Length: 71
Image (tube, rainbow, N blue to C red; front, side, top):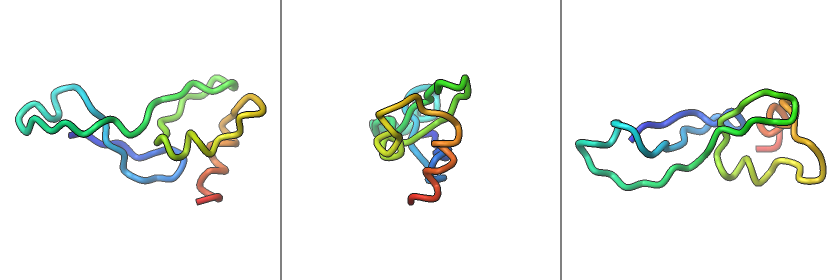
């Protein structure tokens, strides 16, 4: 299975699909997604970091950068 670092916390996150696990037939779920934020930037975030984003206003790149400070 392929993995990618989370832009928020830096942890390696599993990415399902594609050809990465065709031979091993692993069935681990994807642990994050790419989000397009209100300021037009895109970030790959794990679900834990997504839950820590503010939900009372439009999220920006500064909010993603602040996630590492809150770990």
